[in-house]
Length: 193
Image (spheres, rainbow, N blue to C red):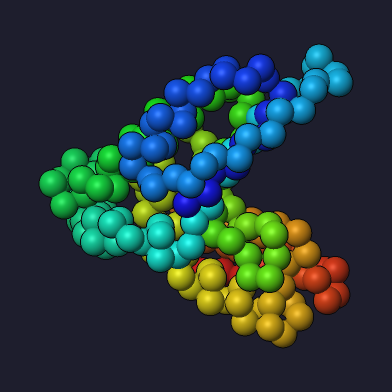
């Protein structure tokens, strides 16, 4: 998995999030870009953790499937506390710890690479509650393969994204994929159920 960080803070500030993510995710050398701050009122810090659908599903697939099945019966918090959800819980805890170590103005996303495009389709992570991050992560992992397959078809047809794609989590667990279509330059969306 590739971790990319763009920030205006001093090198070394808040680096503990790298340690937290490295405990769970097989990280390649992180790419860190430091930009001098031009406006003291405007802070920059964004991070993206991008991997293929296969990388995301890797060790998480089984615990994600069991967790999502139990959510309907037991609720999110109770489902997360079962032994079956161990890998998912560990990943969610690492993401929450990483979020907590970053500046509060940080934007953090998890994503998949876009076919024939240097950008990614990402889902913004917010909040400090492990059960909320686990819910979002589980639904992202479950749909990462569908998102990649759809985006690959769209790219072949000239309808792929111009720039980034955005995965918006819905309350029911589905994700809405939004992008600017390269061919028409129109905003598009697709529901991943």
